[in-house]
Length: 274
Image (cartoon, rainbow, N blue to C red; front, side):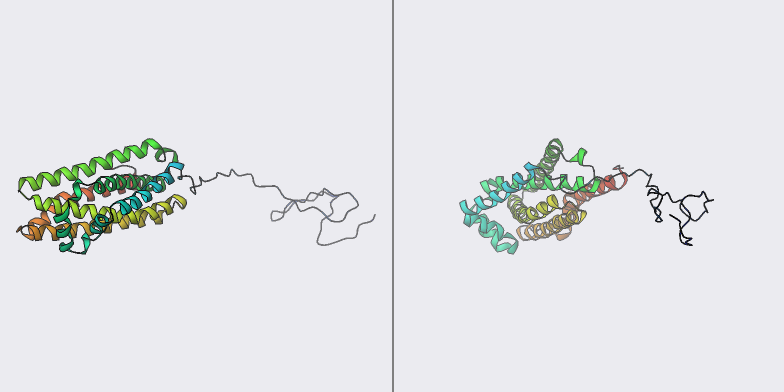
């Protein structure tokens, strides 16, 4: 079949010199076709897939642990309704703390033990998942042994703060102040646990840095609120100067937490603490 001259197509039966700015055309159709093929060579680069973060940090025991936290709140509210309400009313003022301490001591109650254990477990879970999201290292941080290591460190930190506070109050014979400070810490811990449960749940299903910063902000606000309440309770129960109370809070409350936060920030930013 004779082929008409077309300025838009080159003759597929002739070898021509390929210009620099054109692509060689290979005709894979029968010889009597006038339509050439415009199939070019494919991409020869190496594609490296990025690790997917979604749902990789979620494990079965994580949801079981969050369910245990919710069950703990519900059981304590149903078994000890009056004590539960009194503990939650402590941030409302000194009068609520006075009424609570006249009726019972929260440090020697089942409420304190159960909520302290729940607070440690939930805080450890949040720290572990935050390490996974910030470092993007799922294999290293997202396992059972790392969780129990963080739990042990958190428990040691809580016990250390308890014994230091107990020693300072014993040294200056401030037993009533110790009970007030521990009651404030216990009450703020319950509020923090209740608020952190949905944040950790969102972090498990959507592991992004936004929920990590939201959780850190909640913990920071709770820490500041606890320090303010402790200073008020100490000032009311003792005749100690405000300057000495502020010095105590800086030395035994603010400085250790600031050191831990700085060490964690340097670890994820530079890969080393020092």
